[in-house]
Image 1 (spheres, each protein chain N blue to C red):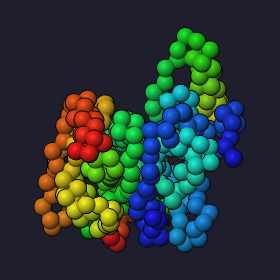
Image 2 (cartoon, helix red, strand yellow):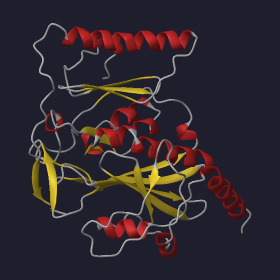
Image 3 (cartoon, each protein chain N blue to C red):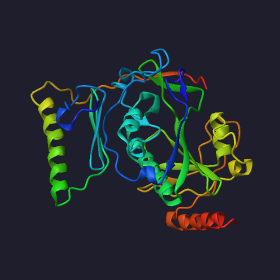
Length: 85
Length: 238
């Protein structure tokens, strides 16, 4: 079943997907993909969203810092095959 | 409808109503391989890893409010390799426009799927084929009209609007076997997706048949007004 937001471990798997407001956050082995928009309204919901987003970003930085990182990730080469359709 | 050749869907169909879209999908979920398909037929999560491609939903998660069907739509049998810029940009706006249209007219039938054009196709993970374009066909039962959005699986904001007949010719699949031939030939107008969307003629690719784009409007509101009038007239027995 779905992970709760606090279980999100960046780069740990290719499965996790969660949303904060209209933001979609997907876990990949080589990236954390964040797309969409979010409004952090000046109310309790806005604060909750801000905390959730911060938790994701903090966890991402924690996974990346103090690691021997390349300048850019490498994408697996794409094959060209005959169109079967 | 799944293909063991492309390791993904050929199309994914939805029947949407205004009521089904009221509420908010709680999107905390997990992408997963389709358990009802054997490994030889299906895509695995690992096929998409390090490919640079998104796992692009055909039937979108935001259409599924109840938790069980929302979970089911995260099956890789509902995904194709999609360029992130397209998935997060023009495609998400096409999905939103489709929900907007459904809320306006009350009920739609939607078929979404990949298009593979050209003599050669990209393949990721040694297994999963990358579509060259993606379509979303929409049928409104109350008016009997239909049309489809088509967008290249590429960065940018280009999209086309085509008739169901043109789309079916392009993909070689009869998507709506019982649809009135006249409705298939004539593309209804579709609301223009938000953002920087740009309506363009459909690229011909390697198709031997001349494809022309159907007329479409860029004034979404005016179109909806016209459509509502048509539905009103339809309901009156017009």
